Length: 385
Image (cartoon, rainbow, N blue to C red):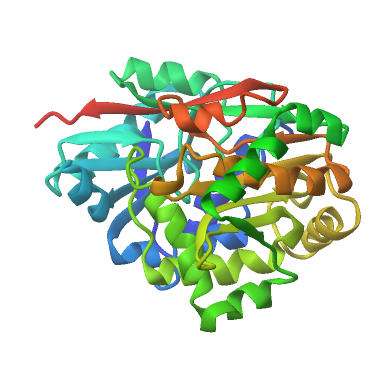
């Protein structure tokens, strides 16, 4: 018999996080969540998303052993924006047993129904900055630190429970041009020059995290993140980042970035209008670290960041203000980033998940050697009264 237990206290929370590690132990493609990050993600005092979200975590047990987990989340800001009454299921994992998956999903449905929700969607996190979308293709491809990996049987379980497709995302493996001539053949350099001249644009680079954090009296980071807020505003389920979230992301992640892989495009008033950022893949390092910083995980991460980077780069975010889209601004980003990526020795890049219906985002890769190698899905189902 399967029983459901609400996560209560730090011991339960650690068990919730570590279940994923246990379920995927030895899997060559799964990348473990970073323990310390997830402890902060589910901390109501530390995660700014709790200002507009409510959530509960649940464990499924059989004979005292954990056999599944799930987070039930209501993002009130997103529901208000999209005029919906959705409860999200996220961080869902379970053994290949329909009794377990059914108990987890029904728990989220009940929790949402009690709070007036009429639809269940997922997997989704608190916001778009969290991993989202169940993997439905690409099970033999190495995951990334910012995406979900799951076993193929997950899809059969949710379809059995009556879920249908809400939206799909695609991810691409993009081969890095081996010569500048190949990059030029992709037209990025030419288009970048034309765009810069026509719209009076230029690229701004930074030497270190402190320089960007201090720029414009500390207001520059806000402007860069507002590019993401405006560029992503009409994408599925997006909820605008608030000031506390921006501060949180900036101070947590900027210090780990190699500034060569951060590109900001400014207009003639020196205001940022586009940004692109990447990071050398930490997937293998996280696997070796088993998702933990201590006692020795920090060494694997430091080695991957500073001494022996992986051959892949993860493209984390690309955003262009709506009024500058379709004006060749993406070419300015690529014309700056491609030479840096080449010089740093990366062989291929992993795109971030992109909505299949977002044609503008899909077209930006058209001049590069790439292939769609992963697909993931958000599922939806009406909640019965």
